[in-house]
Amino acid sequence: MIHGELGRVYHDADVIFREGDDGDAMYVIQFGQVNITKKTTAGEAPIAVLGPGEVFGEMALFDKKPRSATASAHGECRVLRVDRRKFFASMSRDPTLAFKILQSLSQRIRRLNEELAGRQYLPADRP
Image 1 (tube, rainbow, N blue to C red):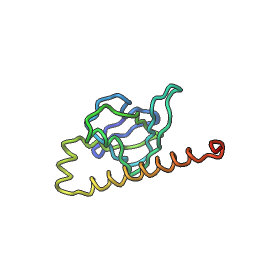
Image 2: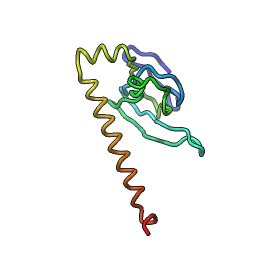
Image 3: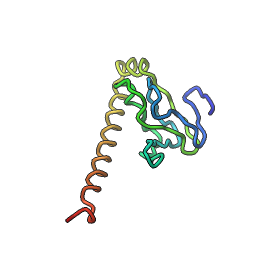
Image 4: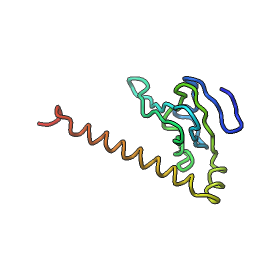
């Protein structure tokens, strides 16, 4: 990984954070893509592939719990780390970042709802 003024560059498969790590920051993808995966009994399960402008790791800013998933580079990417202190300071000056996080969370909840609804109504599940 390369440290840059505007963020950190990660190369394919570099781990940004691991499930279970303590979290005190969120991340914004400046370019490239990031894989989000979760441990299961069958191994690592893909959750999402995120792209430029998307945020991840934001739950750590609010709930102070360990990371719920692993984030790693999907090819080369540059990610900006925003710690809790910087986030709340910038939010007081400009609420745009908070809106971006709410928008991202809303999209993820909508996508999960659609996936769950699709699983509920699979033809094989019907009597």
